Image (cartoon, rainbow over all chains, first blue to last red; front, side, top):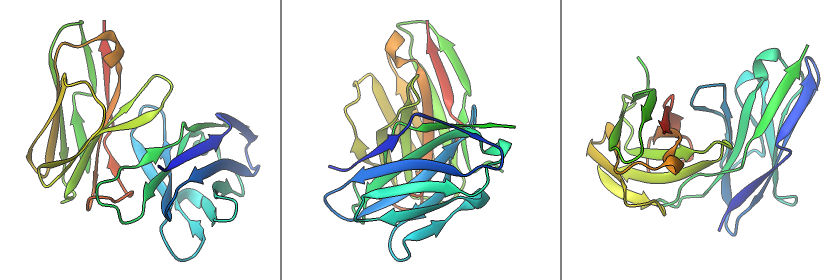
Length: 115
Length: 113
């Protein structure tokens, strides 16, 4: 069975600082990996995804993530944090090309950005 | 136009009541989902429908019954509500079954008193 573990339930950064949110996955077959963002009182929005191909994927709002098979990681980064980045971030995994499977979410990381 | 909409946004009700949440998507997607987000923000899949066919049915009490009248709509009916049902329920859709690229509705916050 597949799973994701998000290290750190809460990350605090200053505006302009590097954002690093950690995600490790466990999967017996090649996974597809995702990062979603949830702003307060809203639904989730897809930030970026890795399916196949380039292991460094770019998403919306300046975020990117790198798939590292050897480390079973898919960490999310942004070079310079904005106040508007404050939100809940979820890493998720789904089995590749398996029609009956569902997204499995990590427990989420709350990102706080201070001025 | 909102891509995935849910009604109501807030639902406050007493234990033992029956309530429904409605979801509609205008993206032309084949697959729709219900997720439950608990007070610790943990998200878990409850059900998934593909073209009106139930394809995922996680371990959920049978007081919860989804219904999909057509592929653009997925409703959730809950019987005999319990305190533990208090949560935020999200509807989502995706272009095809097995897609991790999903579009979420704004959520329905259910409070059972």
